[in-house]
Image: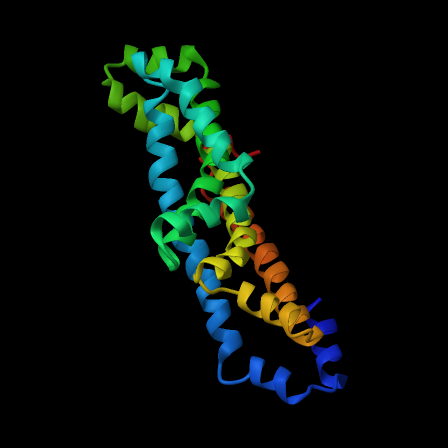
Length: 226
């Protein structure tokens, strides 16, 4: 894909407006902004969704699971551009609105997989941990979470790819990213700018998914590896 894009650009006749849109490090700036948006939003998804998922599987808090899942579903069911527009009205134009929208949009897969992974654990293994004198926190850290890691990592991988795609909409809230190239190409009817922004987004999503799949294999507990 990258080679085909490069060959196409090599023979394309770029006018002054196109060259101006792609010069001065604007492409690398947009790419770096996109990576930052994806990394920061995913970080906040993890520190919110995983502890919340653990909490919702503990005793009385489990009764709140349907409510929490309903809110998480609302975040993802809402059209991303509509959610971003509401946040811009509330918070104003800037990266903060874009990041909050991305977090709300990507929290569901990590939260649902954390809850599912912890609930799927074999009760006899948990009893065995308690039987050898482990505290509830010890059972959680040394037994429950390691067993739930594969499902949790699958949710993180989904959230990462979702965030790469959603970050293209950050431009409408003043958040930057590769969406700048895409909207510039559409607005000015400059196909090379549009193609470059789109291809970089696709390549970044595929690269993130590949890296996440490697992390999924490497971070899986040894006893759970096939």
